Image (cartoon, rainbow, N blue to C red; front, side, top):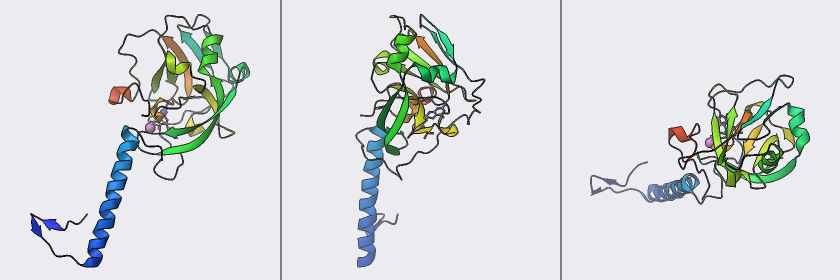
Length: 221
Ligand SMILES: Nc1nc2c(c(=O)[nH]1)N[C@H]1C(S)=C(S)[C@@H](COP(=O)(O)O)O[C@H]1N2
Ligand SMILES: [Mo]
């Protein structure tokens, strides 16, 4: 952006240019603040068009329903490996929640259908010693992330297979992704094929983005 000042010397500018600078300055301030709060908390207004951007560090794995399985292991006392239809038959709920990425974009009122983690913990008998649940992706990046048991117990923490009434699009996690409303999108592990209950010390689990500097607690504040 042009500046009205150069090395401390006042420069004369025309009235129209001056007004233009004022508007540009106000816009920069506004956008800057909005972006800041989107990144570091407080923003309830998504930037951009309000639609999903596909974020994938490891490409879209092919979904072959006949071969696909999801396993529940680690500190589940009744570990199991299920087909897609077996999973869907366990129980399902619908939740509508806003979605935000740390990049500063978001989508309002996203409809999800899936099974609550609460139900998963009950069904596979999570061991009382477990502190976190880790979700592993089948993509080429071995993307993974975790939730605390407290997060897992919320009634809108889901393993979801539908987005706005449709099966998850392939690039958005088909057939299964984590949904953790109230936290940033990097917790929403796509292409989940393994759900592992673990007991961790206070340091917790370092997922894909946590290893690259993002906080393990991705709560939107
Ligand atoms: N397996 C996997 N899951 C992932 C990611 C990824 O790169 N790989 N990106 C995360 C990030 S940073 C965001 S914001 C959301 C984006 O979801 P979308 O692609 O459906 O918009 O997915 C999350 N889940
Ligand atoms: Mo993200």
